[in-house]
Image (cartoon, rainbow, N blue to C red; front, side):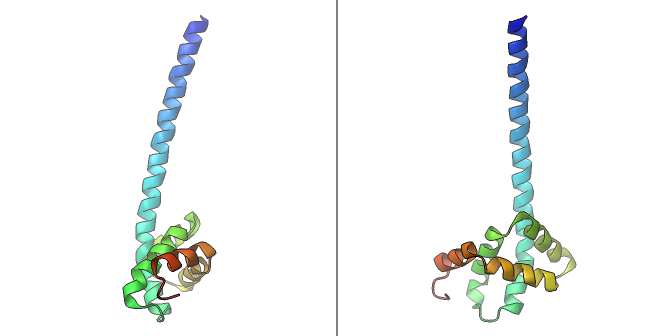
Length: 114
């Protein structure tokens, strides 16, 4: 009887691990999709509201913002890529740009501008 319980527990744990793995993959795909959608809004904000950023570096700035944005910010930016950029979008990009991690990213990838 104990042997049966141990086998059932092992099977159940295996199923849980597989479910967790699938759940993590879905989360990663959703996050990646959201970040790609958000990139167009960030690019627009940088191009229009930050004229001091040279055109060849807009993509670098966009990538650093996207990489350092929190999940809730990515959702807002992705939404802006569909409904349009507004003051909240600009404020979100400014907030992410002001973070030390974003500044570090920019120093590494675009050192001639900072």
